[in-house]
Image 1 (cartoon, rainbow, N blue to C red):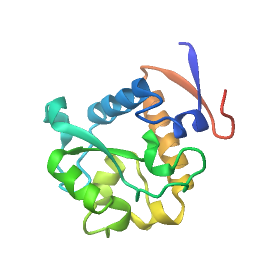
Image 2: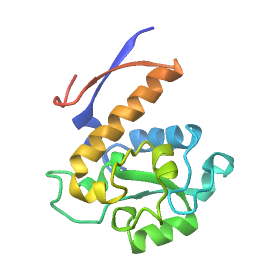
Image 3: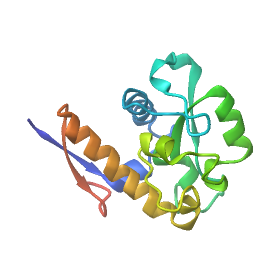
Length: 156
């Protein structure tokens, strides 16, 4: 099986506007990986695609994250049902307590946060890099694709 090189910064800087294909691939990957809604805990794999949307887990702070603000990155987006999207836009997951966003649901979308959603605020770059690694490991474990990752390079 051929290995596909994937650079963290290339993914980190991808947005719906500048890389729609990657945004759609991330959305599809999350749905078929058994993602749970971060707020309701509902399994999203049975929802029709038309009823699911992507929303950032981070506050919308311009300039936070360099050229591409963290909240715009595909790595900051979670899959959710419409009611949760409305709630997440009013108050992002990163500003909620652990009782509002379960660790099981966070893990189902490849966020592993030791201190709950507060980790997203404390170290957004670290949280997104960790999510990238977990997503790539899942792709590799599926046997569908072989990837080699590069955390520090924009091009592999």
